[in-house]
Amino acid sequence: MNARDHTIMTNTSPLAEKLVTVFGGSGYIGNYVAQSLLERGARLRIASRNPEKAHSLQPLANLGQLQFARCDITNEESVAAALHGADYVVNLVGDFTGDLEKLMGEAPGDMAKIAAENGVKGFVHVSSIGPDENSSAAYARGKAKGETNVFAAFSNATIMRPSIVFGKDDNFLNMFGQMIEMMPVLPVFGPDAKLQLVFADDVAEAIAVALEDPEKYGGAIYELGGPEALTMMQINERIAEAQGRSRRFIAMPDGMSSLFASLPGTPMSKDQWALLKPGSTVSGEHRTFADLGIEPRPLGLFLDKWMTRYRKFGRFGRSNERAKNRAAG
View 1 (cartoon, one colour):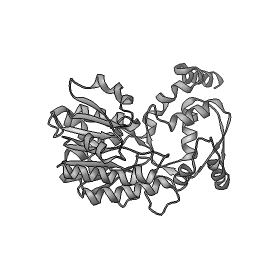
View 2: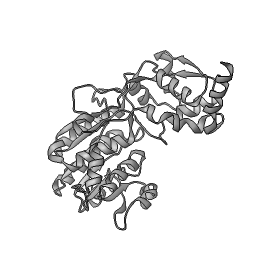
View 3: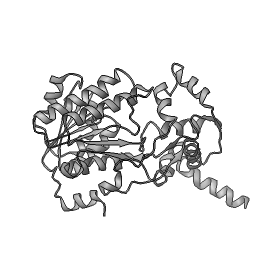
View 4: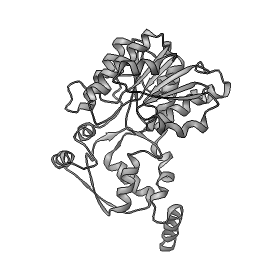
């Protein structure tokens, strides 16, 4: 039994009836985090520039369990209003556009400062694997500054550094799934870059577990990686296999990949290329899922089912392929 099952079955979560403000809760990971916290009986305040994007969560909440706040995290008054009366805080805000130093560097520090002044019990800040104040990528620099500022203002905060987060409706697997569906020959950028793709549900569980016991899990960094380290080439090959498609993949040289990322309108930005090239794996220098009592789930547990939509004959595609193979044998 993992931590989540135990908490839900015994219904003794410290988060029950407590108010948790989730900054950036209307985003992709926010959906998973909200569900994990709602299951524990927490009351949620989704604070976002566009909180209406999280209205789909309403059927999952009991009456009065879920509220929404329009918030500009670069404005301290707006942040203070979103934190009013909160017992716990989660910051999920991240982006590749805009003033990243302010959005992901300065704003998290302001959140943490106001949270500490208001007696918040626990603060979880979601960063990413590989923050680096000297990186050429503004994203990595912003994340590094954000971690420093959060710890400076709220010393018992918990920092979560997930690898690339995957899920049924993510923008990662589905982007490659669509490309593989349409194109017989595909370039692979950073073909040898290793990623420990991590399931969104597992990241959400890690956040909830850390919030439940800030004394035990606070003041530390957790690197969250899945159980497999796969190269970009292997990920593309697995997606093609799950679709039942034969595709030719061409490993692209770094120089061409960098040039491609510099062009306008491409699906990969310069920052994303700079982050992809070194990969995204657990360093071994920080705590991990194991320290939270969570066993992360592998991509292979879900990929076949999720790629059904991209098969030639949908859910009948794999059975047709097997029948052809049997006939040929």
